[in-house]
Structure formats: C-alpha cells, structure tokens
Amino acid sequence: MKFKTALTAVIVLLFAFQSGCKKKEEKQEKMFPVKTAPASTGYIATTMTVMGTIDSKVHAWAQATAEGTVQSLSVVEGNRVGEGQVLCYIMPPDSQNMLGQARLEYERVKQSTGDKSDEESKLKLLEAEREYNLAKNLFKRIPIVAPVSGTVISKSIENGSTVAVKQPLIEIADLGRLIVKTSVSEDVVSKLRPGQKVSITLYADTEKSFPGTISMVTPGVNFQTRTAGVEIAIPQRSGIRPGMTCAVEFITAARNGVVIVPLEAILTDLEGNKKVFTVKEGKAVVVPVVTGIEDNTRAEIVSGLNPGDEIVVMGQENLKHGVKVKIASPSVKEEKKDNKPAGERMP
Image 1 (tube, one colour):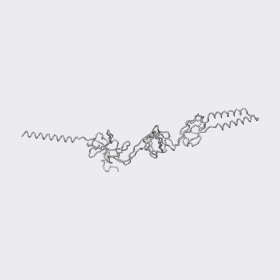
Image 2: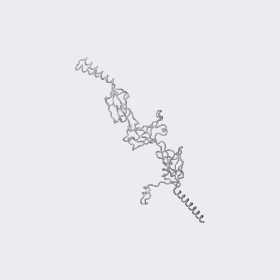
Image 3: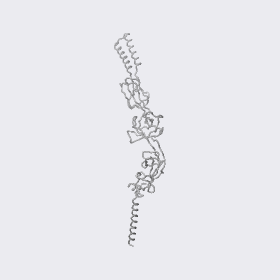
Image 4: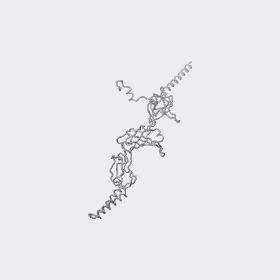
C-alpha cells in the first residue's frame, strides 16, 4: 500500500514537472523586434545625373582674317556689340611696309623741295603726294567685325598685338540665351525628348537648383564616345555665366499611383528572387514580390503587395516565415503626443 502511494506521488510530481517545463518553454518562445511601415501608393521616378557646362546659344569668336598688328581696338570685356560692328583693325606687315615707304618718300620730297616755287619742284611734290595717297588707298587696314550680337566675354589681344591668320581675338556671347551643353550615353538617349523638364545645380552653388527644359537632342551618337549631345534651355538668372560647370538631373522613368515600399524592406536571395516580410496576427509572413523602377530610397512593387500592407522595414534580416514578432513601440515623444488630453491637441 505504501509502495503504491509512493509511486502515485512520483507520477504526479513527474507530470507536474513536465507541465511546468512546457509552460516555461511557451513563456520563453522567442519574439523578434521589428519596425514596420505601411505600403503606400504614389509617384516614383528614376533619375540620372550628368555633368554639363553653361554656354550661350549664340556664342562665337571674332578671328583674324590676316596676319599683322592690331590697331584701334575699341571694345573691352562686358561691352555690348552688334553684329557687323567694327571691333579693331589689323595692319598686315607687307601693307604696313609699303605704306611706310610711300610716306617716307613723300616726306623726303616735301623736305627737299621746301619753299621752292619752281614748276619742277611743284611737280615732284604733287607726284610724291599722289603716290602716298594711292598707297593709303591700296594698303588699307583690315577691319575685324563682330560675327554675332552679344556681350564681349573675353579678348586675347591689345593694341599693338601681333596676330596670325584665324587666331581667335574676341569672344562674344548672347547672355540672354543661355543653355547647358551635356551628353548622355547611348542607352539613355532614347528616354529623353525635347520639352522634358530637368533639374540643374551649379557647381559653384550646390545648395540651390533651378529648372531647365531640353531643347535639343542630337539625332546621332558619337562613334568614339558612344554618347549623344543634349542642349537644355535655362531661365535668365543672376550669377550664371558661360563656362560654369553644373550637374543635370534627368528623369529616365516615372510611375504614378503605384505601390511603393522602402528599399531597405526588400531582401534578395542568391538567385535574384526578391521578397518582403509582412506582419499578420503578430507573425512574420514572407511575401515574394516583383519590383519595378527605383529612386534613391524607394522601389515600385509591380506584384505581391497591396496598399496598406504592413511591411517590415527594420529587423527583417533575422526573420523566418511564421515567427512571432514584436513591433517597436512609438518613441517617447510620439507617446506623449498621442496621450495628450483632447483639450491640449493641436486643432
């Protein structure tokens, strides 16, 4: 009898011990802390940034049409000039020599005849004067005119400078028709079109950007660089000068009204398959997804999610399908805001 009683007591103790262990295991089941955010709908765009240079649609150099010496230079940097306006003259060395000889001969005859009034002296002086005037008409200075209307940006000459044929002398640009010149790779050029808006940031002022409009995309691609040229019309703004460097941001793809999630929420396996974790009834649920275009922080979800689905955006690397999760509680500031009495809430 005593043996049976002792055996019963042992069995009861074992059962109680096992029940306690199970309860302890249940209590100690691991929960994974995560942070979530709802999948949203909206606009997303993929962009590309390239470097460009500020220029003018009307930009040209006045070049020397002959070699010689610069004379009567009439402009300085900043002057407005009109098309066809004379900027300076060039005296070719041969013409200068012939004209100089004619002048010296005239001065010599004039000095030798002096105040003589005889007929022979008068004829000599008249002949020398005629030769000198003929030389002045024959060996003239060559005018250099402005090829376009605009503002003198720079010049490489002064009065007395010696220049060669086709040497650039004076740079002129229309500051009222500024553009950005840049180029893009051949795989992108088909995504650009005239009239498309872009964003421009000057290298000299990276804190501010301003809009521009594509005005021209070259129809061909450069064989050496495999790029196509792009011109962008920009508004008149103070501080913008030809020759400045800038960054141009193009939109290469855009979607509106699509499902969007943060990039960090997406996990990719070794085979390139993508997935996200959602939270349903306190558990992690793995969801395969197909993505579309991306920006710097977000991705378009083509299939797999619906707007409002609760997506795990932090802690998803440690999750498996079906594990319990604990969603991070709001910050102290958020709790205080949410717990304010009705009379203290902002309207």
